[in-house]
Image 1: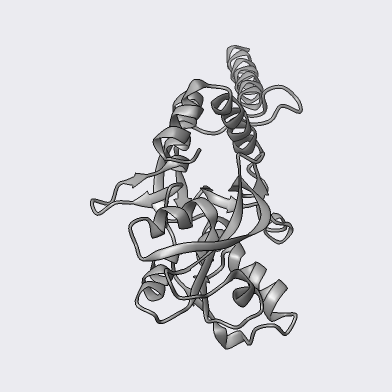
Image 2 (image 1 turned 120 degrees about the horizontal axis):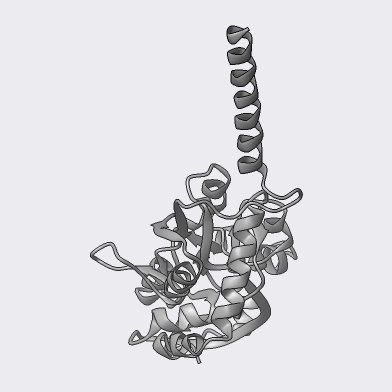
Length: 262
């Protein structure tokens, strides 16, 4: 009898433990999981001022970097920044080499098929620059009369492909693609190409102090968002909350002023 009682007690204890474990793992029915306490790897373009740059010491800086640090502090997230070539940054996210992209990524239909975007936090247009005194005009660029450079995989390259090359206005070989836009600006400065198209604020920063001037703009009204994997719904919700809180905090205006974005 004692042996039977012992077995019954052990069986009852096992059931209680299983039920407790089940409650710990699932929580309330239908509740979304919260971001786990781990380090989130933030993918950035390391050559994209004023949004994200990596200095000579390997430190990440810029408007997006500062914004992410603020959100991380408010939401209890541990983050680390990882520069990645822009044309490979979404594949890196999908392959789980990084956990999110916070680096001036334009929200597009094509990208939205691969990733989930946060609510927009900034809007840009495409600027076009040329060497001072070159005589190159925006009309020349849009008519495909010049050698035009931009960054591989960026929305400027997509716009040129769809609106200039696809319409037969420019032969493909006149579009020169670079790993990053500073390389294109360098080639423009020494005369290897005739013009560069890229996001307005970033291009303005890159040509400062150079013998290069803005010759016009294409109004694309591109909205920036943070990108995450489609199944990271809890992380996305946290980031959306963080963006909303940041944009309503005085620090938002401080960041705009700090990075000369007004």
